[in-house]
Image (cartoon, rainbow, N blue to C red; front, side, top):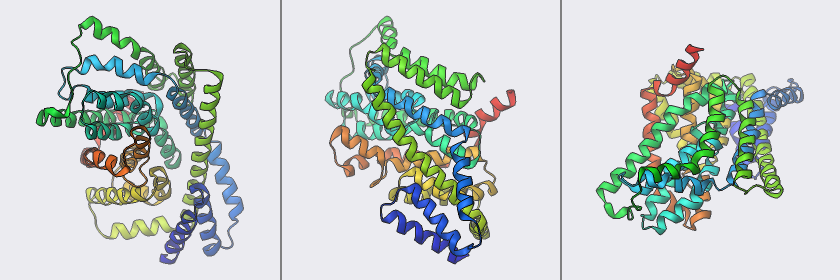
Length: 434
């Protein structure tokens, strides 16, 4: 069995190291390993069946729609509306306007499903505006890097759809499971910003001008479109009115209406959004097909059962197993993009976690957290690259600024391991009512 594992790793390293697309690398590794160790198996029929099953899945239909929604919203003026709408409400908070990056990211995450889109949209206005007002550069850049990752945790989440397809778990349950952890993680970020501001007041600039309650309420008008879109997308799913795919269609229609209302959407920008959405969807679709095929291939080879048996023989406690997996995914996240690391390892790690007593929904949220951590770890951290394009700072500088938020995420991942009810309470409660 060790030969099978070494052969698989060697093929993956060879294919990915030569620059082959991740999806094709997964397919090639699966085909090569089966050809060597299961020469009588009809590999072409197995691949064709798995590729078709992956491509026609109803859950997969929601993926390109949510990606298109995020691309359209990225081309609107939501970033300006979020800043002006939230600024008057943060005046009295410790840290003042520094909280806008977290609050804006939380709201935009609830309609985008993408970490990169959230970081880019919020960062376009908030980073330059806050740094220009005298706020500490590292504090703002770090909070943007950390809060931008909420695009993966707070539904609708693209990475949760991918995990749901691979793990054969309800997308709606995964979406529900991300709400409470996403809110608590956002509060943790805000708590850190407040503590830093109290310890060192020089980190924050001057308070914004005093505003009356009526002026604060008037400022919220700019948030109306995004709040209505959140209600339409999330509310329709949790109210049982729409499936995730139908809610994604509602989201696309709502994003188009927002663009038309703000007069930022033209035939050209809509075509650009559709083109980029198609590119991203095709890339993710190929990775999912490759991951599904590799997962089935490993099952025929018996590798997941073998590795699970070896790890169980170590006698690790459930919490110790989660700590080991957390360290493993952090190291892996430094070497490859987070989504790729998940689809490559899920066939092996999911059975281990289930055997330890955790369920699929909980593990999905845990994996989203470790993917978020991968987004801000160099050299591959994609959020770091997005922020570099916005600010012009070096990747190393941005990574150091994001380090406190990395540790907050790591601590939060361990907290939900000790208290898994943080993740499972909401989906279990709503399922019981239905």
